[in-house]
Image 1 (cartoon, rainbow, N blue to C red):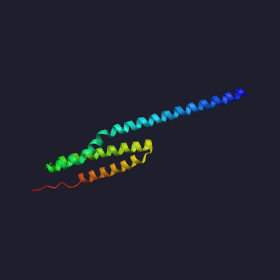
Image 2: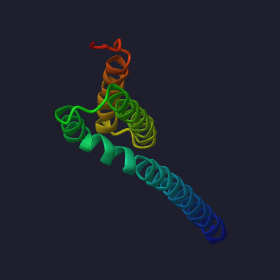
Image 3: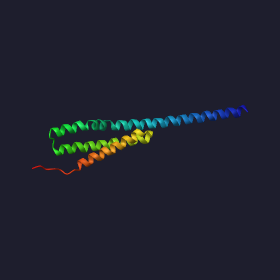
Image 4: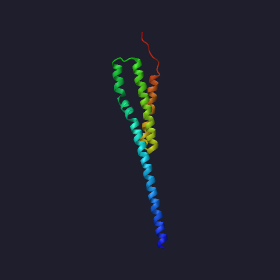
Length: 124
């Protein structure tokens, strides 16, 4: 009887250790994914944060249409990068804030694309 109890306790301990190890490995994977997604979005996030003031400055100082289009194209690419990194974070964590941020970046990217696709006005 003692031997059977000892075997059952050892099996429970082994299963518990295995489950804990699997849980830690999964947590580490999620941590690595989150770290990668956050580092991927550092620069684009700073660019998008400054987009309004930079575009305002360029417009006030009569920047050429080409320069404005290039900046808007860059902001569109930054919004797309933030969209993808937010999707990675949402899939890894299931946190709703990342899905909402992704939706905002999709809308911002679409806005920049529509602004960039407007016809060029040539004033004589």
